[in-house]
Length: 418
RNA sequence: GUGGGUGUAGCUCAGCUGGCAGAGCGCCAGGUUGUGGUCCUGGAUGUCGUGGGUUCAAGUCCCAUCACUCACCCCA
Image 1 (cartoon, rainbow, N blue to C red):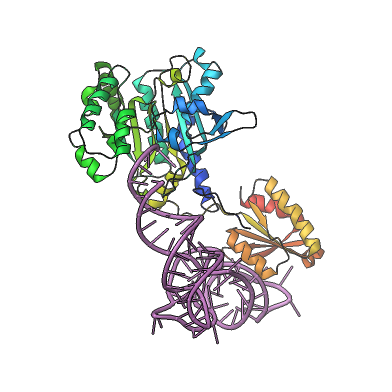
Image 2: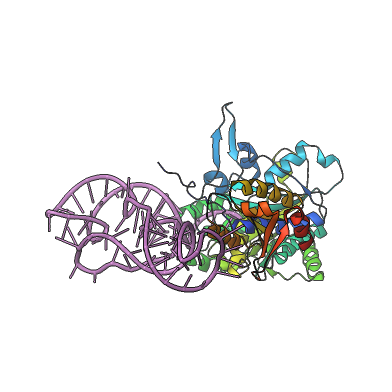
């Protein structure tokens, strides 16, 4: 019997795992600086939160949720995305009655039962940010800017921003009807014909060449926006331009979830294969009401951690060596091991990065381990040194070795790294 | 859910029309009875994904199955 990670999942292992941490930190940093507070919600929710929030018409809800009944007979679903949970929590804690907007960021794992491919896994990580309870183009622009800065802060240069508006509850229905009428006249397979009826906008981003060819003359949302949506969108675009954010207007850009309205955006990168979206988001003015809350116009995004690491890899940003040790201690003999263990502890408490040789290996092997750790100094102490009250301190870059009194080792090393 | 590709050592892979299970890297040890990187020498690690079939003989051929992977679909 042997085990492996479940189908469609993978393990983050050193040294690559360091980049997952760096990406979570880097993508959230701009939001943290902009007054977004940290929120952590459960990894599972009442199934109905997603079926009503994400949308009955999406594949996520109809085919991809990890749903099960718990021992109390409740239908539970592992979260396939983060926004619905955040809105639920904000409503549950009465935040719409307080100062608005409520600005929150989060980082976590999400679950979708999908066929895995490059950049798409059954368990994946996202960093998200949401601003709830305000209808203000500056807020849309702020969110987009925070994501742009997050990618830039990681050193990414080839992330492109696609921008669109999906209209609101006033103008979307008319556009939807016009689009449906157009699509019904096309030669499409049965699943796609069904999608025309339940979620026609999604047909626009079908990648099959024969489908795309037929969509050349499809009606576009931009041509059907009402005056207020049009003005709102223009304002968002102007604000972005003012702060030097470049973007591409993509009138075909749609979102996979039903709750999006107005401002819609996606961050794409060409180095990842077919799953080119590294992040996406938009405004969702109706979501709160869809899940039983008060009117709460909001905007937010989710950025894929795994995909961002892939993008960084494609840009050659993962080459740096991960953080090295400052000191690597090599004990020779049982008595020395006890003394070294205490010294290592003391050095660590003093703030240094310190490791030591474990297991009964020879000096040569221990020195090899010291070299591999990337440590600047090797601290070698054998029973012979204990008798002399001295420790051997070896600079691994110059190979210079000096004997120092054991009693002063900690202070000397602290001095070298202060 | 659909289609293509690939499964041999920890990793990357070679293995011809069937004939003793291999290389490089990595790992461990020795060369140096207490000193890393370079070098030399030696060593360990395999259910050849799994199950069946054909054959004197299968990593190699056939069937099935599983896994991985890429793409469609879907989506961050």
